[in-house]
Length: 342
Image 1 (cartoon, helix red, strand yellow):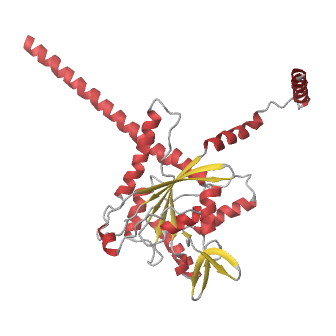
Image 2: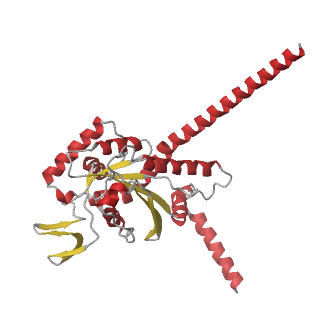
Image 3: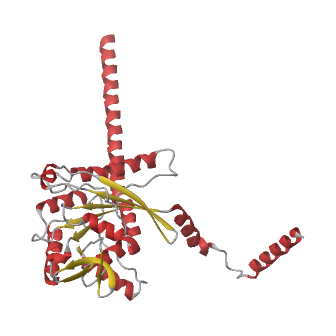
């Protein structure tokens, strides 16, 4: 009967468990349990792109995540861009790959550096980052903390023009305003407009100026003692590639029977994913495959914790001031009552 078959199966399972190593408890399966739960829940990542207009920010984002986030965007003319203030544009999409779900949010900042007077033009960007910290702090302090949505900005790709001699004053001031609030990864835009020698010189110049002006950019974690040589070498390549010299293209071109995303010029062909032409693959692998979780960890453990500590400190100061005010009022009332009575 069915019951006898079930009973026999249960006995077989119990015997097989008994036959296992007596010293094996089973907590070694904890990583698998965490993996299953995390994959089921899905992942979130918020990426901000900043820099002046015309540097290929939108094209690069589309190339990185193989999507088209900006198909409904209105292209402004020169006069409209001059009058435009810095805006915050949010795009959220769901991406699924091999059963793993990612809710990707792209924060665009059109208008940065386009006005005649760019004083404090980064204020709206700074304010937006703080607003996300504030919302998370409120949700975390509330009663229902099970389904908190994390909209904190985990990374900011800051695009640097290839046509200058290094960092512009706006670049310096903007990055200095943001570097204590978000992980900044500098990107040298439109690398196909430069020769290899020019890219090398500009990278060196930008690195020197970042250090000179005290700008804190994202630091890759130090390798552990048990990391293999190949991993150490990959980490060193990433560190040496800062700022990443990138090219973006949404167009499929064909050359010598081979199709790829790139650009065709009268003097040759540029492949987006060719390591000899740009650092695109390094940037994508770093953002998605190797360091996405580290970017989120630093956001949580450093940038958000600094904001949270400041909030608690301000709240404590307000409580102390309120207590002092009440004490002074109480003393004044007691003294007034004493004088009247006397």
